[in-house]
Image (cartoon, rainbow, N blue to C red):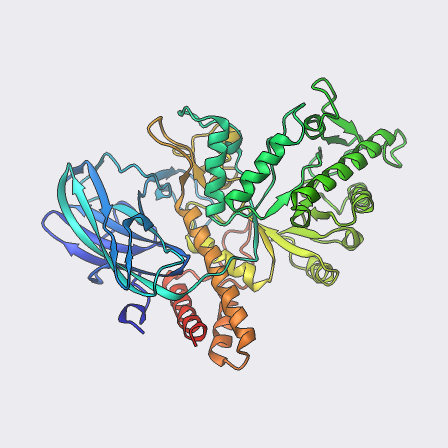
Length: 561
């Protein structure tokens, strides 16, 4: 084993302290604030470790003795067992957003690091920190071992400093994940402000960004009145090319009233039917679901929905994606309300009777009455304890998948470990899918400027994991630190999947068993959504890095023997 893999890189370490600038490195789960002091620990280089096919990042922080302008950074090729071209590294610059109100008792106010624009800041004040976020994408073809490169920083065209960069590549590749990850990005459905991009160009950029960060479950959103299936099929083809593997079949949507099924419930399906030529632009936007007595389906609605299901199922079968698709028709139904429960059961039965192989998702925790007609449960983490825990196990025994979602994980003013450990909770609870938050670009709906206003509902950063461009010289989406750490968390999950696979092949390996048992302690219970005073997850990034490192070492050892 090489010296570079003997221990994880340090959390923070000063690399250089000249008469012009102090330079230090920081772990990707460390928030670097403008006035933080350089660390006392020393290091010769900025360092990180990654498996083949993994993406990892390190921060290099500049703290100039005098104000600097015209900052730029370039990364050289990587020399090692083979040569890795400089293109595997991307330099972005940590930007700050003002947090004016805390999300909870563990939060704070002031300038918080979050956006990661490609464009360097215009200047850096004397005695102020500016972090460069260096992301490395290790090719699947990379030979294992230690690689060295240089990051050259310049100011106003003159060389400021040169920082050694060390990358250790583990001798194994992360496998594709079995975890299904779903998300939405409203900005993808309309052009960004301040740019000349078309709707389609913008949409495709956002989708590619999402799939690059682990999202693999989406639906097509380009149905257009009177144009039949072609726009839909073109979009499905694009989604598949971008890496999407699971698809949401759009059959329409129930307009709920605070998650209750209304007495005069309407099913919004106009856009779907119009696209197939079944309706004209002048047709009503929705159909009444129940008959006049409220005792059964309205005959016209039943006929229309059944026809829509049959046509859609046959079309998805022809596209070869039916087995990887599902439907959902109401958001977070309040199943404790009897009318809501009755109609969700009735509608789910109608779908299953019409198309037994079409999977139905319910966006809440299981209840016994719905288990026979539901294939996927996307449960809010608040609905995991009694009595839902027993119902979850009953749904699993019936063959259903259990997914989760949680809307207050990615808080700007909370520890990044809240994000990084979430996939460890997914692993701990053996769920098979997750929502990457209800929306990644809530600013596209609210009209807020997330660069200046971070609060969405009660949380800073809730519904905002991607930032819009600030002007015509930028192009979105602009990643956030939280979104990068989210991908790191999903890659941790892939490492755990690989370790568990090896454990099955080597049942007598006690060390691997101990590491997998330790993994269950990283985030043993779901973080609270509304009670933000509890942190049931490891808050020390180096403790987690040590566990990852030890797991990589044994995976490498077993995989290569």
